Length: 435
Image 1 (cartoon, helix red, strand yellow):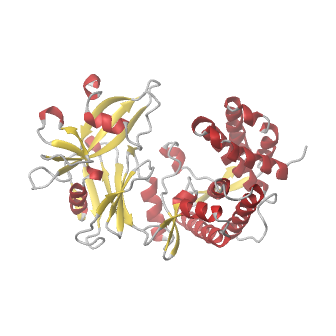
Image 2 (cartoon, helix red, strand yellow):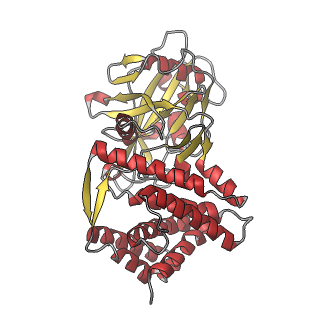
Image 3 (tube, one colour):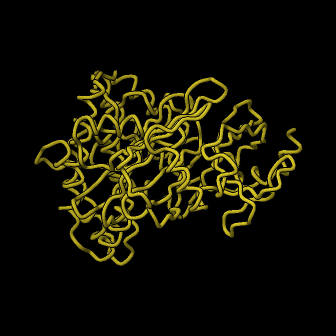
């Protein structure tokens, strides 16, 4: 079976897709299992269903991925994968690039849609009867997003894990709290393959009106030398509201500062073993982490992967999106309560990257732009007039931990950018420690 799957066009499609995380891990296809049809054959349009691709790795790990497919007698350019499996005379397509298939799927979810092993819900009046045009998002994503006209989008979850989608769960919690600084959840789709554990397959949300990407906007403003601090403060207030709502809806707890410092120190040691340029900072960065020892830190559910690319500026202000957390972490890790400072540190470093890419500015001006944004953001988020830099050793530890992660990432993927997090660490240790 595995040898047959290696030549299957569905496997070739998955292996070459942006959302497939197993490209460099030696993944091999094990099985492709279809769910019951969302849209059965014989209705005059494309038949639509999910097929679950299981892959295995040399180290024994396994993963499941969702292939949302449409079957039709004609070949649709830009979406067709190949001929149907097992002698099926129809052509198989990536349904996220088949507008007719997407519309048929959305119609199947209106009200309470059900199949033998799937169930979905979309409020009947949540979308117009004909939410066109249907257009796939072409940017880099770990899932697949398709725009439904001007008012909504459907996000197809690619890597499947048992249990509730964190993105859906947190959207529901924020909706209960009345938070408006995110996109509204309109519907969702889940399945119980083979009668087993539930997995979430997709979610439908509102589309932010006239949205501008936070990263694109910030980098353009930095390159032009424009003050971005008012936007940064509004982002800080938006994150503060999200954190308060998640704490109220899903509860709070505490973290042992010694355990957090130990984990950060272990990540630092592992990174320094791989990146020689980090070794010279190791002792002083470790002292930033030691500031957490003997403390008890508040914990709660958080965004988990917060940066400018997870924000949109709409007509009505800033919105925070994509609550699924760090894609490389397991579902259990992403669901685990953490310090809200993890999110704050993520945005602090994102401002650092935006400033570093502003090549039209002098180095001193880039640093001033970054620090102005950081102080405005942190001040609004934690409701303080004190500047962040050199003042808050707890937040400094989280920012340093994020920068260590970035050093390792840039070393492996973009060595020309490794100076960005290394420079940030140099500034942090200079402000927070002395020899």
